Length: 475
Image (tube, rainbow, N blue to C red):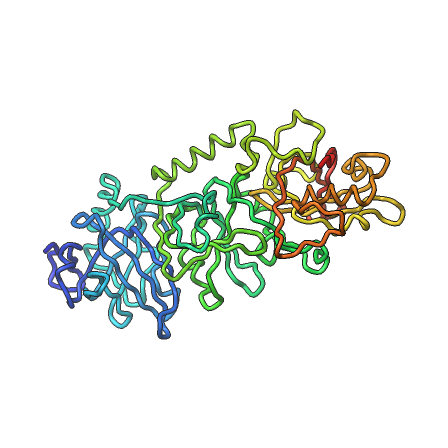
């Protein structure tokens, strides 16, 4: 058994391989964190989570450490891949799942240190009962060197991409992704974690009724308030940014505690997916586990390589599900202008600009062509547009509306109904458009030209709006 040459039990460490045979004993451990469980409420009043740690003696699979604390803040919150945790007086137990260590809040303590990238021996988080040992830094340095020369082993990772989540709906799923942002701006303060892997989530059928768009419009986002432009500018312009939530309000703090650091890559295990308001939403479950991945991990490099290949391709900003080409429901001017994504538009550096993109039209407001023109004859329509990266409202107005519906003479209402049916993926009908939940819509991918403008000189970014132009509906 390896330990420090010190008579004080508080400063004796055992290797993990020795700890595994020290049943019902209190031991001190120091190891590299390879996996983090989602923090949650225990069956009592405490909060709990599980970490998995490894060391030189047991690089795989290591040992699980179960933590109990009075608050989420008192649980360990690992910041980076390969960070080091020092544990004092944890009890080795044998459960049905195997041998693990139990952190008892009455007498156990911990300290978290940065891993191979750390430059000092000062912990960035400690538990209330923790105190330093004289030789702690010796073991911290040893583990830092070990993680550089011998990355801790892991089991082969089997995960899928966001492009495959449709087949995983209702099932548990693993995902390699980057944490982009963590928000608490939803109504009621429910946190949302925004993640990305460079691929497109598949489009979802639309179940809402067009005649309810005034009272219950399709939302542009799941969060209560739109993200600021400063945040959107940090998001990649290609690939779905997936919102992730907790399953119920009772565990709201789970996501923030376990996924607190934006910019890190993680392997999420045992998550599920739901469709909310026509948007895919990831669900963090009590059994969810995560492993932080370093930026030079092969899996991370592979995701970034695929993303780079896509953005360098002339057609890489088209939705993956519309290849080889969008439908012929619309046609646009400026055929030589490359496509951009809606995220490109939202995060563009200038207030006013012109773009060409491929989108789905989820809804029109008004819902019936009878009301598309004002009493004076001017077109005034709001379209809800979507691509894999974002949603936005774009207006069809005045002469742009005339072009949109094929020019003069103005088509009949019956003709516009057929055009709208094709645009929205509604079954062909000669009757008024009323979409029921029994007949979901699957809008086609269409080309359109969009221009941004502002309506208030004193608040150009805050009053930024979007209009359709140079686009003709030929469906």
